[in-house]
Image 1: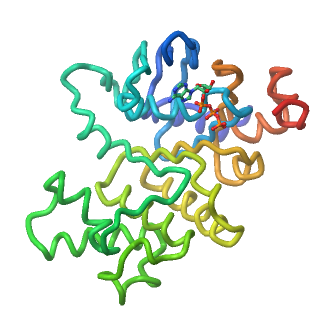
Image 2 (image 1 turned 135 degrees about the vertical axis):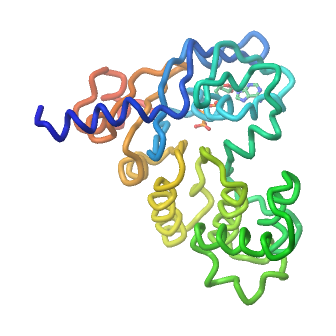
Length: 265
Ligand SMILES: Nc1ncnc2c1ncn2[C@@H]1O[C@H](COP(=O)(O)OP(=O)(O)OP(=O)(O)O)[C@@H](O)[C@H]1O
């Protein structure tokens, strides 16, 4: 291994943002996630791939305690965010979700104006002191989500009146407005056409300058395009995790190979 590769690896090891330790998830008696251990890096896009029902979304939701909202769901193990267990009793899930934001499969803007959609998080978390500061946060979030130019003259129009791709970028703006450290994306492009998908993928690449991004995707091409790390799940197990190029060119587990070559899925 040359010096540069060695250096990258050392840097990587110091950039752990989330560390999952022995994570198990049950829905009632059904064991959906089995003993998952993974270190997710800061300022990196990590893709979760695997066949339908393997637990990608379930595991993603453990990372900001979104599973708390499902009564039959039980999570065991630890999820450390910068070393602190997010399942600790003293952690407020609402505050946590400002640090670990989420974008869903289907764009889900609130029935409010474009401005109010983005201002929602900063308002409920009291992140700004006055209207001028809030205006700045809204503008900056819309710029990060590559939507500012398209909406700057109609900030008071309803968010639901935008196109599907614009709505998804609005939801991304809403998520980044609280300056989260991690952004979770559950199949963010599945409801979008190819042009809007390309825009969101480009955006994901830009977001990793500031955030750790974790994306669940059914599209292996998308995982290969946007991520630097890939985790392959199968029947609730994390089968393989590594550099995206390695997972797609030299997987070490036969189940990963079967999936990426289209034999299972
Ligand atoms: N709310 C729920 N209640 C009960 N079981 C659930 C719930 N959500 C998911 N499951 C079950 O947990 C397992 C994992 O589902 P999950 O949605 O996490 O998989 P996935 O890999 O994201 O699937 P897909 O790619 O189809 O979205 C499946 O067996 C699913 O039926």
